Structure formats: structure tokens, C-alpha cells
Length: 370
Figure 1 (cartoon, rainbow, N blue to C red):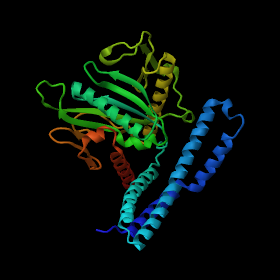
Figure 2 (cartoon, rainbow, N blue to C red):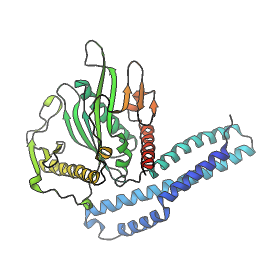
Figure 3 (cartoon, one colour):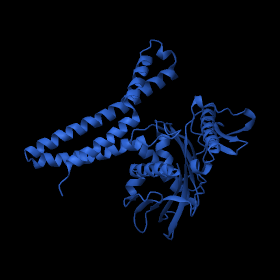
Figure 4 (spheres, one colour):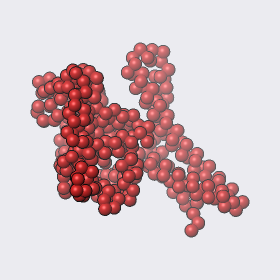
């Protein structure tokens, strides 16, 4: 069936109009002008942290504007290509136009999804923690597989990440791991990944080759900013130091550089061991502790603790997504019904379709609750 280019182009323009209105290009242009003025100050690099923040914000703002303007240019160019191909009855040019249309649909959809990220913390960078759940050594291995999946996803998008803590299980895999995704909107994007992930496969650790079901929990919190002013009294914190450990519990250094920080009033625990010094690990632990307490505070204020942080048990009856590797391959999100028959690709970080479906689902849930 022939492609209705006129209707498709009209729909793309309508979506981009909405994206432009939500983004507010005039406000974005004013922000860029202000940042450019700050970046041109002769004393900018007297304060390195401030300078890096300004230049980073300017780069992101320019990229966002260029992406939106560039998408409009691509739609215009496609319209010209379709007109010429139709006038000249050129099947090769029409085929090229169909390919570009498919690419444009995908890119415009991604931009549209970004406009749905309008929650209080959605613009923040993210701190992600993965914990093994029910399933023994398979669950620990599953936690490590999930860590790789998310790091590969970030790598595919050129998003910088920092692994803050890894707690290895005795036989294989991880008890838990915590990492940062240091890019704007990382929290809003990854927040839909929070919950219990279920794996079904033939266990590589079972000498009888039996099928095993295992679980891991994913927690996503927004990274704290200095303006949030979460003050934690020193006497509310218990800090233990110990030696960093690798797989099998093997010590990986000879000093007590790892830090375990406990917030006594709430029982919240944060461990950090991937930095080289105790001071660095302590600073990283405090930053993540402040982020968790901020989210807890906001959740309590809005009486939505379960919705925001989730009561994640990582066991039967609690999963939000299933990954089946045997007797067939299937990844299915139980909230959105998004699915894929190629589990290997998903586990290699190709999870954008699941994230986008999750963001749309979350926004529809919020609209229904309004």
C-alpha cells in the first residue's frame, strides 16, 4: 500500500508544534543568551566547578535547540523530496523518502516522549541501585546482567556513568550495585525502570540443567543538588569503614577506604567502595544518602511513598517486567504490554522502546489520577 506522505507529514508537523510549545523555544533562546554571557566572562574559570556547570548547561541547551530546529528542517527537506519524486515518478527517490519518513517518525517520537518528562525531579541526573532478590546465585548473576544492560544502554547514548558501589556475591554475580547516570533527564527517563525484574532461564549454576526463576530489584532516585538543602545532623549518621572487596569477598586494597553510611532515624543504608580514598567514598555516600532522603521527604509530603519509591520485594507477584530465555525468548513489560521476542538484544541495552512505553504509561496514569 502506498504511503500517504501528505498525512504523515501533517502529523509530524503537528507533533513538532506541540514539542516546540512545550519546550518553549523563546525561553530556551533566552537561556542560551544568558549562559553565553556567563561563559564569556573573563573570570569564568576562576571557579572551575561553576565554569564546568555553565559550559555544560550551554552545550545541552544548544543541543536541545539544534535538535528541535533540525527536526523541522528534516521535515521540510522530506516534503521537497516527496514532491520531486512524485513529479518525476522516481521510484528510487520515493523509496528514499519512505526510509527517511520511518527515521523521522522514530526521532520525533523520542522528542515527544521528552516533553512528557515534566515531573518535579525529572530533569535531574539519576542514581540507580540494583539488588539481587529471590533466586540465590541465579539472582545475583541476574543483578549483574541488569547492571550490564543499563550501562550498555547508557553507552549507546553516550551518557556518562559512574559506578559508585558493587557488592559481590560469594559464588557469582552481585548482591547489589549503585551507579550514577550523569545526564539531564536521566531520572525522568529511568524512573520507569524502577521495580522488580524477573528472569526465567536454564540455570548455568544447576548441574541438572533445570529452569530457574530469579528476581532483582531496581531503584531509581534523583541526584541531589546543593540547592535542595537537605541537612543531616551528624548524630543522625552512623559511619562504618572497611576494606573494599571484589568477587568472592577478596580484598582489593589494603586500607579501610570503603564506607557504609546509615541514617539512624530511617534506617537508610548507603555503601560506597569504588573511589580510591575514604574521603571520596564518604562524599559519594553522603550525596546518595541526601538524594534518598530528599525523595523520601517529598514522597511523605505528597503521601505517595509507595508510588515514588516503591515497595520493591524482588519476589513472586511483585514483578513489573519478565525476561524469558527458555523455553522461548520474550521480554514483556507487565504494565505497558510492550514486548520483544529478542531478549539478547534487550539485555545488550536496546531498551528504549520499553522506556518510552513506560514514560507514556506513567503519564497516562498521572492524567487519570488528576
